[in-house]
Length: 133
Image 1 (tube, helix red, strand yellow):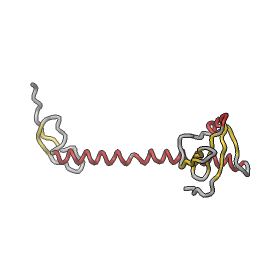
Image 2 (cartoon, helix red, strand yellow; image 1 turned 90 degrees about the vertical axis):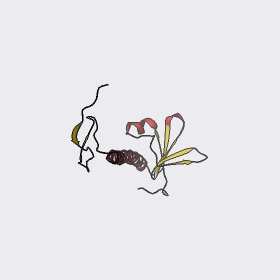
Image 3 (tube, one colour; image 1 turned 90 degrees about the horizontal axis):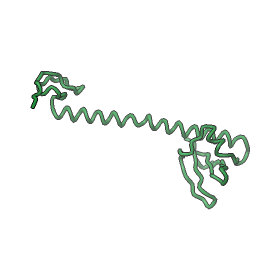
Image 4 (spheres, helix red, strand yellow; image 1 turned 60 degrees about the vertical axis):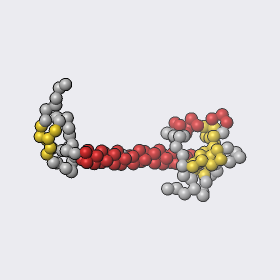
């Protein structure tokens, strides 16, 4: 077996900086520093999650804007095709609430919602009890 050369190096943990001797592929001075570095790495990975959350909020706000614009064209609820919504950039996969009724399943983006009808038609409604966040 080939033995690894021992050399003197600095610990790779950013807050340590101690020098140590050991195998040439060793990067931390102790198990404690190795564990601290791993915990810091996990914290950093968890804090990248808000970028994902902000993308979801952006999609929901876009859906709300589209529903509101179509609803306000008329004074009452409006029926459109799902192609019109998709062409506007609407994403059917993101909702803030689902409401089951005898008429069907209403999906909401904040205070505006939609009900899927037959033949690819969509009924857009407003629920004033919902609060825009």
